[in-house]
Length: 233
Image (cartoon, rainbow, N blue to C red; front, side):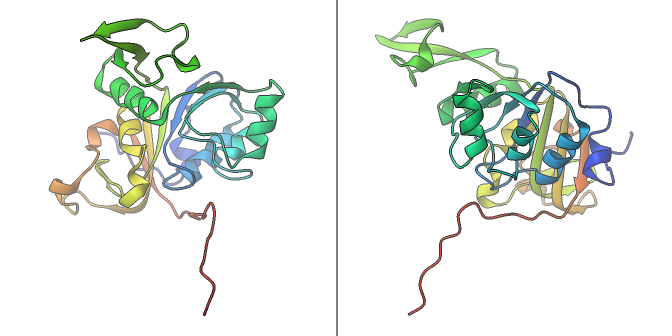
């Protein structure tokens, strides 16, 4: 088998990026984002990206880097705060936005990874979210159909991984990463620590290596989105 290990983010994305691609990017706010892979994706220069992510980072960091360079054509998100450039582009009609309730977005990604083309949910019924989508009544209740999502590329952040691609996420940095790892035609991962097979307890592996095609070990800034501290007494 070919090695899944690459020396850096730029090498790991070589040959994968193309104009008009859909990219899933893990993370919630700045927690658990694949920051090195995002920067490397920016450096490829690809355009017209459809980005699937809970949000778009902040100005100058995370997916905010791709907004600054106008490489993102459309965002599929559940939250758009903390990013003035996102707001400016959307209000100016320069950026397409598909809002998803957060749970619906998570389930659309999970469904895509599980090979489920669509599902019904009550969330959004009677709102603009449901406009133009098929509806169905089950047990007297109305549901709206949502489709599963599969990306051309998933970029994921994990805490530890082995050279076979088995992954463990840490605490809330788990967020969207496990489901996105399953829903990419190609999944590229950056980890804080890369170990040999057998070093990870199989009982605690979150993502099996079968879902991972490429992996790097990388240092991350792990920037805090909003730092709040107590006053000293």
